[in-house]
Picture 1 (cartoon, rainbow, N blue to C red):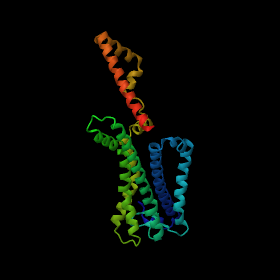
Picture 2 (cartoon, rainbow, N blue to C red; picture 1 turned 60 degrees about the vertical axis):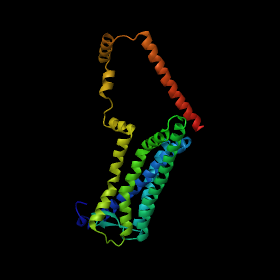
Picture 3 (cartoon, one colour; picture 1 turned 180 degrees about the horizontal axis):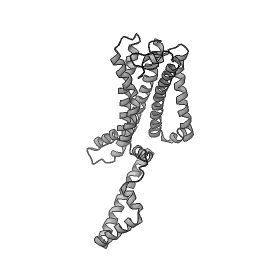
Picture 4 (cartoon, rainbow, N blue to C red; picture 1 turned 120 degrees about the horizontal axis):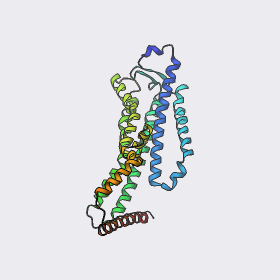
Length: 288
């Protein structure tokens, strides 16, 4: 806190409130990431259940339950199992990591390590499912000796965003969990505690960058949020005068297609469509 410990000397209630909200928000973030991972797992590995489990109503209930469960995990600090105080090494009002060894282990192993293990299992199963699907598709291309390498490369490409989310969670939260678990006696340096705490709190800021970099729909959603709905291309197409001028210009400067070239283009289009349908049909038969 910028004011320092002295600011809270006569405002203990405020320090407890800030500490409680901070820990509750962190627990809620863990639960939200776990639910996000489970939703991706169900969507990719048990797609027939996805609409039943993750509809609009159930998602609202899950969000509310995340906050309620997070506060329930934090509540023991109010009744003696743990506590709230101004941590001089973290420079903030936070839960008392030195008050109870058992509660500190519960936070570091159960509430940080637990979601980490569950996410690792789900992401492994998702990766396995993607690999098996790609492998079965490329098995049809028996003439290509590089088909398995292509299947592997596409699997890695499809799993890249999920893998980054998991690695970032590990990198940002594991140092904090290990530090608080090993330093219940408060012997480690202020610099180390301050570093791992700031690193853990940066995690939420990094996730949105990963989603924006790896998900085109997410980027479009951000653009719509800031009012950038139309690109220059769409504004051209929405203007009838410009469209008419461009059409007239194209028709006046470009030669018309003769019957042979039109027949060739049409035949090529039919071949492309047929090959796409064959690919879709093969994939469907594999799933059956």
